[in-house]
Image 1 (cartoon, helix red, strand yellow):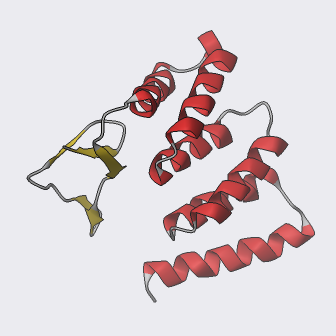
Image 2: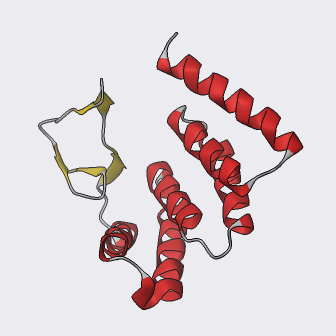
Image 3: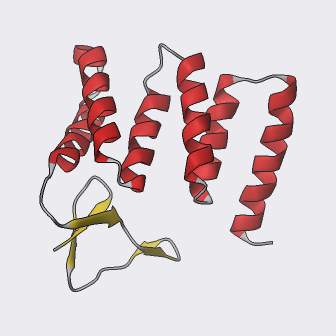
Length: 142
């Protein structure tokens, strides 16, 4: 059974569990699974439900911000990253703050360069002649 098929089976199992319990962490896991199979609209809805149910936890909103990065929605990345930094302030870990700052930098980039997630094949990043990678997990093509 392929990884895609296994992921789709996990999604079905979680969706059936949602009818019974609707646990916020289930929405979080469901969002990650949808993202894995590139069902970004469903992932967005699941992350929003998780964020609404886990209002004191920044992780669902961080994952939503990363999803918007993958989708290329600079405005939503900018809004959410700014909101998270303002809400968390000093309580935020250095690594999370750095990642959010990178997302803010990406979202405010007004160059005409195309920005897309890294290309992966067999779990490895493929490098192209026209691209360079930065730590935030995106590839900027000049």
